Length: 213
Length: 87
Image (cartoon, rainbow over all chains, first blue to last red; front, side, top):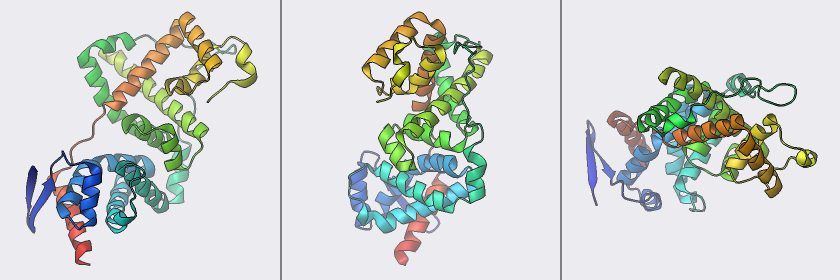
């Protein structure tokens, strides 16, 4: 097994190889294997933080929620039965804790911000302002790479609920039913939030393409 | 499956077409609504372009990467783990 070591002041931190599967790492964490825990943190903490920020809308609170989540993972690792993936289980722990920790004011403040359709239609339901064509320019690899970077930077522009759904669906690749279940929302609500989030990001990328051209 | 209900018999307008696109992209659109959206897209370059731009957006999101976790942050979590283990 390949092993990386990071030398800390209080001793080396050993990280397992990236080739180990999540299930094998979880099994080893059950046996008290620190290196396996470190590898899971290395693998998932950046994604966990991205989801936490989308959930609580505040970096400091998000970092705290992540710490709580990893502690809950260590404490509750025996309860992980492998019926969902480790990633889905980890996200569920985070979302439960983040919802508990977020203040009512934070949630109320972000739930409705910008939570409206961004497309505009006339009284007959036709486009009032049709989209300016740019999708064919993304065949260029450099343009595609630029957009992939920019869309990541633009995610914080979404209202929290839209951002959560977009991150879980389109960034993390979870399916619609899992996302609705994780967030405690209906399938229909999940679809509306996803639609609005994607539509808003499309609009922001359109502005970006206007600058690229 | 998502359906438009009573409006199914009428031709789609652009607003309806856009409202159906998320279900369409998820493969969640029932047969007849899917056919009507396909027919609308074939005749409406604006909606076809909009759908293409949504696909580009989704593709870009799928390739949006996160930064690697820094060594200091990893040490912090391992420290947390050791403190918990020490009880």
